[in-house]
Image 1: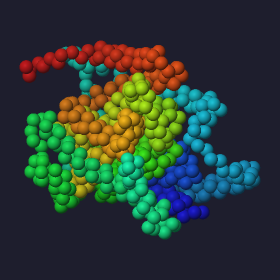
Image 2: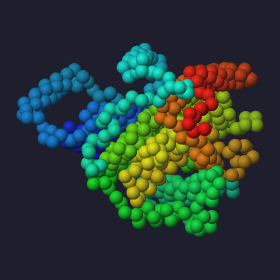
Image 3: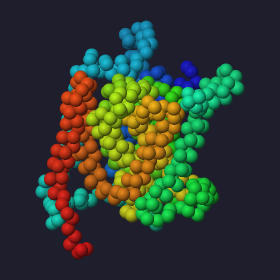
Amino acid sequence: MSLPFAIIAMLTIAAAVAAMSLRNLVHCALALTVAFAGLAAAFLQLDAQFVGFAQILVYVGAVAILIVFAVLLTRGGEAPEKTVFSASWFWGLLVAVTVFGALAWAITNSFASQLAPAEKVDATVKQIGDALMTKFVLPLEVIGLLLTAALIGAVIIAMREESSKTKIEDGRSKIDKTVPPSSILHPPSSGGQQ
Amino acid sequence: MADSLDQIFVLLKHWLVGFVPTGWQPLISAALSIAAIIVVFATLFAITTWLERKGLGRIQNRYGPNRVGPFGLLQPAADGIKALTKEDLVPRAADKVVHYLAPIALLLPVLLSYAVLPVGRNMVGVDIEAGVLFFFAVGAATELSVFMAGWSSRNKYALFGAMRAIAQMVSYEIPLILSSVTVIMMVGSLSTVNIVAAQAGYGGWLPDWFVFTPWGFAGFVLFMIAAAAESNRSPFDLPEGESEIIAGYFIEYSGFKFALFFLAEYLGMFAISGLGITLFLGGWNAPAAWLTWIPSWAWFFIKLVAIIFVFIWIRGTMPRLRMDQLMNFAWKFMLPLTLINLVAAAVWHFMPPGLPRWLVCGALVVAPYFLLGRALFERKDLGKRVYRYAD
């Protein structure tokens, strides 16, 4: 275990623990982003440039933003008054330890763990691109189709009803007058504007 | 002579690195590159603030800064001292830690993105294989910093500004990346150094820059529009919108933290303009073979200053967009055009060189522009604006 790996691993795990245990939901989301970035650093340390940068682009750039927006639009990101730990934390811990033990036992005894580690290949971005466009073109297309379907579904859910679309007199289309959710208008805490 | 002038900074670095023991050399070499990037681009930032205020003053028929130093040239230094000596105010209700971290988290990715910009022959921080991907990946990290600044201030306007900025950056990132994908397709490499090398020749009376092809020209224009939106420049400065939401996400920042936001914004603009130069304007290549005696780094900065000048010019000329116009423009106009531009680039690649290739690709670029523009305008029914009371 090299020193950079140790630093990256510690940072990632600390951030993940913080994401679970911090009181403020937005802080949790930010800590989760640090964990994502730590994973990207781990990929980069394994010389997997494409995966590492794609991890940053997708997870830090898009997924984190999505999480943060979801938090703001639903619960307002307000810190709960009481403790974040559930009352039944003991049973939860017991279940978690049992599941982890079972999984660890299964993995260490599995067929895959008996195999010799694959020799290190120097996969360039070009090779990944070639593989995606030739050998794995069908899975790529299927994923593309799936994502397009999800996108269209999201647009249909978000689309306004036709009846509310009216034109105003001077012919310009109406500016969006739907009222934004109150959580945007009022920041999480009322403390700022006494 | 011209050759040694071209490589003067590279030679200087080698000479300096030669003084340290061998084990330390990679570290010192990296530190020297980082120091050079920070010093040069921070200086360019100082010059640009002066240039912008003078330029805007000229456009708006006034003088601009003219009190500090000759022609107001020392104004940036005065501004810097002012920012340093100002009180650093943090709102009582603000989320202290996030509020403190936001400007740093914004400046850091911006500085990182300079690592892959080739500013001259043999002058690049690191030549990584996935250079362009690296640039966009660290660029995407700035969105979260903007959110951190807006959210932690506990201010309506700051949160509004952050929301606007994120919506805008996420929307315009797609045309930005798609318009640069054409270049990556043609070069067959994500490395910025290889992209510059692919544009090195001088065929006919034009250099082999990608901007002088139909798909490259369309790509360059789309890229620069998206770049203006990504760096919150006018006419896409809605996140700041000082007439509506005062200053957006950095409203609650004062003193040097505010200066850091300002710095990050301008450095981001330089970086993305530098990527535009690398992708479409031939990087550090001279525009003609008989001009190669001017050093390569000088060409990069001449092109950069030219683009900055255009940005200032646009800022002084264009009114700010409305939010729905901004979104419609990104999703209904820019996105289809960039997708069609990908097809145009592919056709260019597979057709033999000659006039037919120019005609077909030119039609593939110009026709969608006109058709899409017409169609969108018709639906909008935009005419002369009639005022009911103000006439």
